[in-house]
Length: 114
Image (cartoon, rainbow, N blue to C red):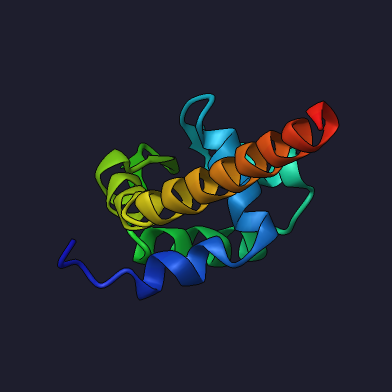
């Protein structure tokens, strides 16, 4: 996790860029196809794609006169790994909540038996 993730988080901070990533989960898209799917100008799409590429979340490859975009699995994995690091804290918090609820339920059942 030594990679600087700031550009990736910047890229993920925009809802349009997150939507583009979701579309790319279906498969690669040309810039023209992104423009059509999002009803954005080509300039706007290129700006969004540049930010996603700087964040290493996508790759952009020339194919003839067009440029093809696809997800960059390695970049996405680095970002996901950063978030997943914190799973243990959620697990611990949820375990504590579960234990508190179970203890509360046991106390209520003891009171009912009295």
